[in-house]
Length: 344
Image 1: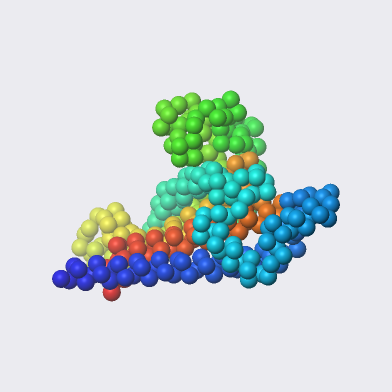
Image 2: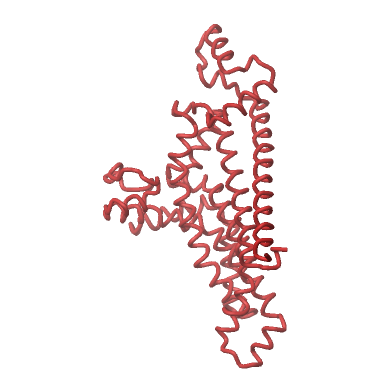
């Protein structure tokens, strides 16, 4: 009976989360639509070009529904989106949803490798700094993390390309793979590392690794620094608690006190930090994709903005919003899994 009640509470909480997602997305959609309409960009001119005559301009103007009141345009737009139609992109002439489905896996792959760097470098550094608080190694880690957090990624990206690609030639250059291997593997997931592994084309896989390692590491620098600083802060708080002193008095080994007791109690807090960092990486890959000519979502959004393609821009902003909302909902659910106090 108790299990049923608990499951019922979780289900209601989950439904409440989904309702919040739907309401937030509707608000975000309305905001981006109306901002797009008041921006000083003529969507008709973007379609017909500056040399079109008046009759062509008027015809396209009416075909796009711009002669109707703004609220009618918004209702038509909602109806199109409800049917999965975000319009066509000016850049490619294809449906926006197809374009995003094509470019987003490249960014997802890049950001995923970057957050892996953030987790496997940032957490040990943060714990090590906290355990050695006040010592030289603590100061060095704090300075390095501050440097990584405050240094512009595009500048680090260019320096990294000069050193590791042009001088040392230990990483790949621009793009996702060497030109000789471009198009060798048919896209299945859109993530080249997975697709090349599925196709057992290890030459392409090796080339993809060489191309992604540098941009992913530089993109992940901010995440490494942020996770290091927050892990150190969380650990310092735990290491000052009485239960830690009690464990030390009992003679428990140091690594047991640190990892089994103190670290376990900061896992829930770290989940939030890692989740938000991952969302920021997905959104903030624009500069790295530009520096490394990475054909991903960030580069697509930048090109669409420069072209004034509001169909692509609105759909992209909605996707970013959906990512953040979904990650927050996922964090909320994980909280309930790892922290029984939040189930009440």
